[in-house]
Image (cartoon, one colour):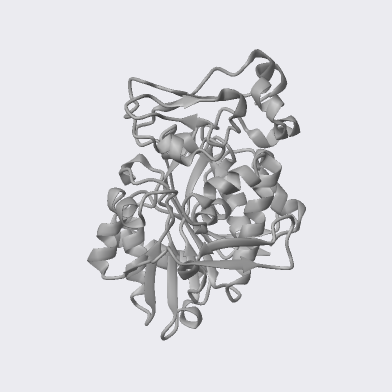
Length: 379
């Protein structure tokens, strides 16, 4: 039986956050036994973009500040960090307000440049990963996802947030290696399990800020901010994601990362083998992304992707010609020349939507779904 704490929290009032984050952690771990003298605690934030936190898809600065203040009751060293695909971590965290909190609270900004290979003999498909060394060599990691709908993975929360352990453009390489829903979901589960092996029991903690979350074609500017008014916490990322899906009124079967975890008995053998602790459970109905890719095996084939799926299009009225979309594109199918708008080789596009994820002004949108796709892919 896995425990998930679910606490009601309507706003980002610091004093209220401190109380409810402390209670969330208390519900799932013995804090006095874990946060002991000399331990290092890595706070893995969700900083996929350097855009303002008010968009609702990065860790809210007040949520981080409250957690740091809770941890300062214990004699531990606190490190904060994440990995952006190509921007420096400092400029990324400055843009979304997290760097200011790190400086105000006088905690350590992670050095994410030195890498470490982590591996396991217990894996599904992918045996090893190169990740930022500082993150996995801490004594304790607190994973801080935001609950979001996602154009590629359908749902993004605790398990998916650990993709941020992978440094820089290596993330794009993984989109090439695992370029279909089944392989990508398997990769995320392998990364999750291998990461968990780096920590002692209950020393990988998941604490989700879902006071504000994202719905629609997330995980960034394509989605829309909404409120769920909740804080989730668990030592099981799989269990937390299942409760998050239920709270959001989303279809668990479309979340292929989660279904792969359940199929392989990762942390749970049954989706109902979860104890929810707390004072709040109210089901919402978030707007789903337009295409739950996990629902159809045909999409493993590039020809079928071209035949059935939308592709990215550039809104020239918004585009800054900054080249971020071309830089992140795993297959280099989005290209840009100086002073010109980006151009996409549609037939080679794997529909990972990384371009949309990093665009700072939401200039990447979707084409219309082809007629055959409308017929075959039922929402």
